[in-house]
Image (cartoon, rainbow, N blue to C red; front, side):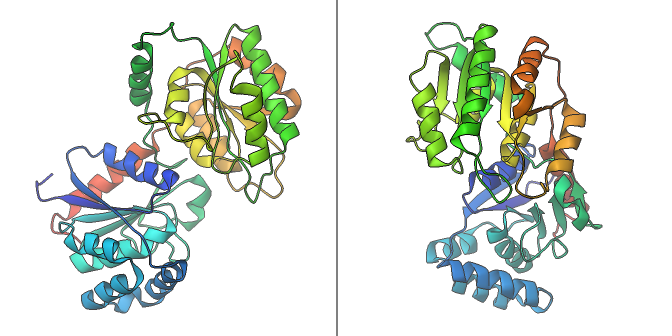
Length: 358
């Protein structure tokens, strides 16, 4: 790839979106890149820019694109974009950065690539769209299909983190069952009672197998559920590590990565699609904890496909103890998900197809 090839990555700062973009960039180590945070003057400015780009994309001039960005973004974001080195390709994940992606690709005559379908713009205006399994109905000639979403997690990164933990002058690392706990959304509601069952089962299985528990929660975890989990686990000898979303961040520590590194196998709740993809990409055996949805789960087919691909084991509350115990006693090799590599390969093909841009 030519030295002049450069990717401009636009970031909304949301961890799930950041990790998708990072996952792709990690697999393009020879390509120069620049990451620019995008901030809007207001939520109305964000929504207005999406609407304008949706309607006016095909009649937009370079000057008009700059004017639209200047009116919608904060001064700092606009200046950062205008001062960025001219890119060969603009990459973004998330609806809020999709419109700036299309505008910057128009200004620089660069390729435009989006991860997951942005609303309301859709994918047809982009040169390449990376679509996970639950969005395949939007596929076209410009799409590349993945099962999950790209992620920065790889078996190699997990092993590096484990080696770093093992090198600390403490006791040897214990055998651990990890739990990545999501939270409420439009499809799922977690009660303290349901969370208690999950915790008590995993603590019981771990104790029977001579293991410990490690747990991380999400920003979506209900406060009362997290409060229960803290009270039950934070000071318990059964819990070797915890990363609660409400706690101050630990410098240099990534809760999800640390749990993946510690764990012999990882349980992850069905509501957190990004956590499921991260766990399935880790090289560790994964158990998917299911609870009844309030409405049809749009990820159900994706979870089935990920299970078929990786060996992810699906668990339900009614038989959780028996299934988790059997899973613990009969761990099997898995096939890691690597959707980021699939996406990066498609980006590389696009870059190599026209070094001068679109």
